[in-house]
Image (tube, rainbow, N blue to C red; front, side, top):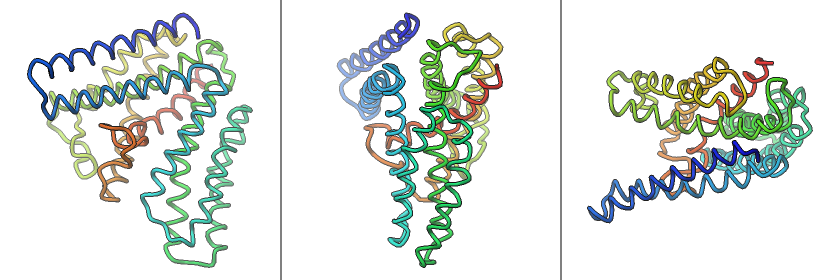
Length: 307
């Protein structure tokens, strides 16, 4: 890792240590309570998330690619298991799981042209034809749509993070690629926090009340401004101009919002609060990275356009 990456990670860990200490002091002084216990639980979860991300994504390219492949595997399994597909279509899922390592192999080999058609085109036809080949028509339309959509949102999208490591971009040096991945993850996650905080403080006008009642216009605008400003400050860290950084930040904030409400709509349709419970205080894995599903794709192609 470059010295700037080390400094960035040390700063993040230091900030997390400060927050943990403050929450711990509050509980020690005022005693345990539901809110402070939840905040401490979430903070401790962030220690685990950050440590895993540091080890998996910033050691080397191979470890990062394999880790992202596992992220896609668990995220895909997490969401597809919620649909309760008929047993006749479970065989089709085997093709889907085989597609995951292939997609990341193509990313590792920098086969961008193949990635663009493998799941969106060939995957669509292969899964549809395999569903028909079962000879079972029970919920076949649901199976074809759900399986392909889930692959797109958990495999196709996240594989673009792996492409950041392997696809040459004239505007980005090799050492800055780790910084770009860290930038993408941090700004995406902080954007969620910014939008939530601004919405809590000033939110009055709901945007999509039937999908996500807590989302407000004020929260969205506050997140857009805050994330764009943060990106401007981090321009030197990721090796782009201030204008380019602001564009990246603005697009991350906007697409992060759409990624969040997309999965909120799915959860509302399934009548569930979380897609899983693997991360204490955060729900499931996909609940934590749902915004990243869209920001990763937009981020990668925006970088390409900045050549």
